[in-house]
Amino acid sequence: MKAIKKAKAWKFGDNIDTDLIIAARYLNTTDSAILASHLMEDARNGFVDLITQGDIIVAGENFGCGSSREHAPVAIKAAGISAVIAKSYARIFYRNAFNTGLPILEIKEADSINEGDILEIDLKDGTIKNHTQNCSYTFTAIPPFMLELLESGGLIPYAKNKLGDNNANL
Image (cartoon, rainbow, N blue to C red):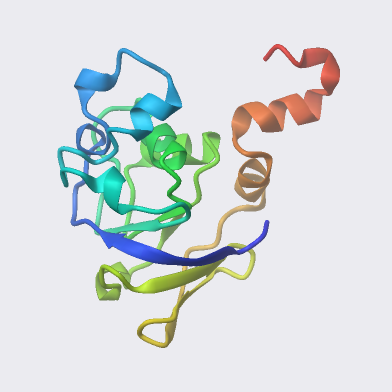
């Protein structure tokens, strides 16, 4: 898995639930572009107009709490966010993120990252370099299977690859 190149950090607090990530009023679609267009709008109105491709969300504890819907990580990834860094995650969000191919990283020092800091992530080495503050962080290791999911783009592409072309309709 290649490194996530230098990208801007966007900061959110603790207990950012799935309704703040993508409001329930938009759950009548699975169109990732529509979901992406409403990312975090109840947490920060106009957020999607501020971000650029590859940016990173940084949050506190319990990111992704709330419902078990996959719409939340789908919206994040489809909006062009390259990764989420947080102190901790709701467990179902954690798994849904990997199933959809969204890298999420746990570091206890997430609070020390400021909005606007320029970060670079090495998924294999388990490090985040903060170019703005000239420091580095180590994140909880991603298990090898989960790295394979990320490299494949998520669970469905992973399964299609493992099963071969005869199962392309998955």
